[in-house]
Length: 267
Ligand SMILES: C[S@@+](CC[C@H](N)C(=O)[O-])C[C@H]1O[C@@H](n2cnc3c(N)ncnc32)[C@H](O)[C@@H]1O
Image (cartoon, rainbow, N blue to C red; front, side):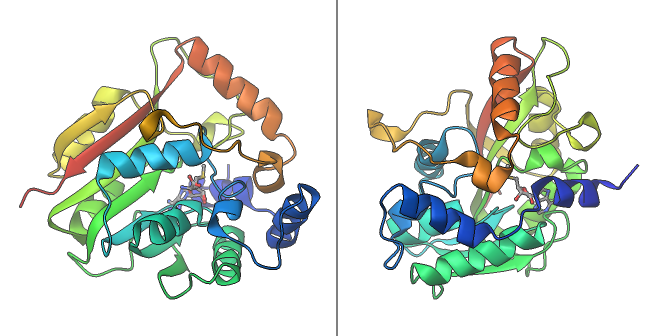
């Protein structure tokens, strides 16, 4: 059986991402010659809830101008661009999937944000960053692909300044039994690592974090309805519809459950 890193990379690998994203946006009538972050955010949020879920996480994390943020598992850079553009954060971002990192760099250049975000390929379990170099570590729907959560959380803790925060959205195992595969983050169970809510919280505490808040409903702040995401299958693969249906059914049957946690490295 392939090791987890190669399974994850082949799960997300996709060709010609930038051209295909721009194609979808043009078909929908958007001007791709002067691309805005708002327009890109319709296609670059690789998680359930789209931009609304990102806004909810930013709200929980209390993001503010100038914050040094690490986006750990950044996908094609959707949250990184949102945080840099809407909140004036300075973002460094890392992801395991080479095609996603390349697309993230190209899309960020196209909307003129390259001076505020840097992207690199690597693993969240072995971060190429100095100790205490971030105010916020942001990880959105990544940890389901990470078996060694102790390492992930230890690395997040290490790179945070004392008093810095870790905003984590994760999908936990519910009491209803095994979820239905394929799912958005894994087509098979051998590279899906959910854990119960208690296990995740215990692991965070074990890494030294203090839990500040836990939310199990992820709703955009202000009650406004965020724009509907476009063509998830363009980035996530042609079978995304089936995977999204399995995710919904697994949630309804309490096999999986959303979890959003804000934790702090104590000062
Ligand atoms: C469901 S996508 C979410 C991407 C992004 N956070 C978002 O919400 O748009 C999961 C991402 O986690 C990345 N990933 C999985 N395991 C990783 C690891 N060990 N280190 C870095 N990235 C990882 C994948 O490459 C993929 O881009």
